[in-house]
Image (cartoon, rainbow, N blue to C red; front, side, top):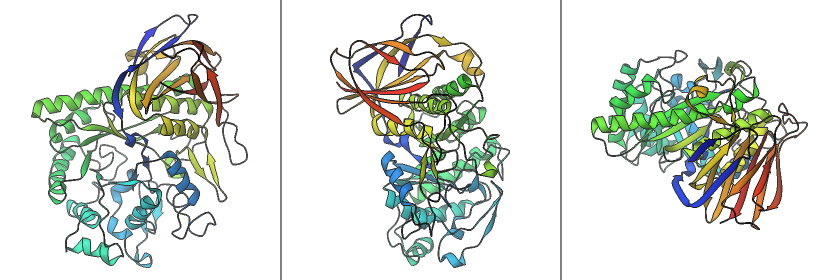
Length: 490
């Protein structure tokens, strides 16, 4: 949590860190991933048989190592919009018998060569846990229960026995299950009204919990503050373990682009209140957490979904990534999981080529958060000047103040980690840091570029982490358009 005081632009900013203000836990699941059958995410991303960089299973070894570097705890699969016409049983068993199907979400063809068992094997290789989204479009409850039985059952029953027949005697014990994906959207096959979805989700949840009471069910939310969220929470709070939110941000102008993720902060705060309203109404003691299972910087015009949605991220986008991650640290009290959309190739920090990986500008900020911003959120007070121009969405400028410095802090094992985005295009800020003893040795991790439109490509890496040391002296200068992570022993 960061509290804020507005000051004049020509005044000296300050950041006050109090290591006694240890707040909510930052769940490891904040750094979870998402892999959809879309573009080159699965085929050519996770799975690339025949490539010298792939292992005997066809899994890209360099991608696996990148996931391990992030210590990614959970990965969502198989969609996304894709799941609304996906029938899981067509993607198991001998590959030569699996049918090729039209893929309606992204206008392609699904070979079903990579399915449930391959994904579970990949998760085991990476050391991550699977999260499955159920087909609530063209799928049935019977089909969903069959998928749960296939994955988790130890009984002598049809789908569990099929798993054994396919070479997997032990259950996969999949913990996380989503009740559909974006069922409200007009882009969905079998779009639902909020009333129809809530009625259906309630009955599906009841049946799935009867089959396996240990699973965590994620309710399909919208933006967190939409009427859909209010209604489905009010009807289904009894069964919801988490409530999902999806938000993407992007803008052609720098400051609306960088400040866009602040809309997610308001979404989380409002959604948390809607959860409590539903709990109070129905006398539910448990508090479902928020599962922000799709988020990123994405301009669908710049990177159309039906063309693979391959973004080329700039320094401005890198700063937006810093604000996104700061939001999740500040709001850790309410967050049970977040899943960056997506983890490879599709609107992703990580891109594969035939011969290696490209780590985009956004990768380096996300990596620093995944490595260091864990443990517990620390209370911070920020004094800064503010940006007063256009925002996207517009409600940001009318519901909150957009500081030039965007800040969060975490503490783990006695190490304080302070994450600071300086969003200003032209101005560095000499900033008073309160709460660091003079003479303390501080690790500095800086990510920046010469220009806001700098990018990383297969030919040239222009943006990566610059590491240095700083001996605390009261004031630190945060360079223009930069992300800085400061670390020191408390």
